[in-house]
Length: 58
Image (tube, rainbow, N blue to C red):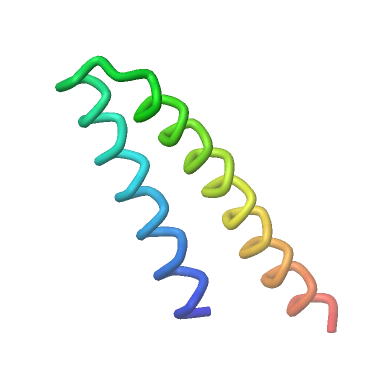
């Protein structure tokens, strides 16, 4: 569980940093990178809740 929390927090931090770089520089690659990180953050969050759900069932 601790691993999932760290991964989730790092993904959120990296997405926020990337979006700040986009705002500062205006380069579209930072925006694309930020959206990709947000997508993987959602996937990591869903995986975290899936593990919690399976843990409740078993």
